[in-house]
Length: 90
Image 1 (cartoon, rainbow, N blue to C red):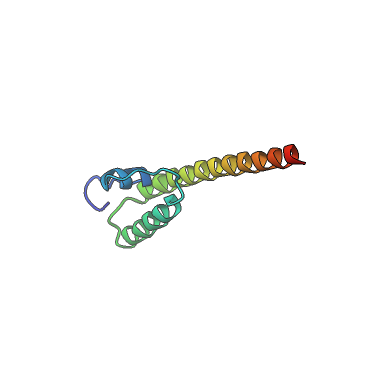
Image 2 (image 1 turned 45 degrees about the vertical axis):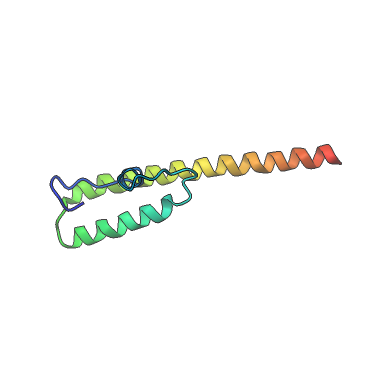
């Protein structure tokens, strides 16, 4: 992150670098919080442009919002399946 041109990773970039896959995205919040912590350290030492940090934060927020929407859809589908199974049995 501190090397020129100060590219800031997303969780996907980190996982690709580690040769891993994000299957369910439940680990994404941990990756995002780690990236935020690294961004804060770089910002304090003025090693990264504040504009680049703002752009990266906005991108990470969008990623987290997509993950939350996806998880809500999964949870809703699971609840609907349980409800339809319960009504079919009754």
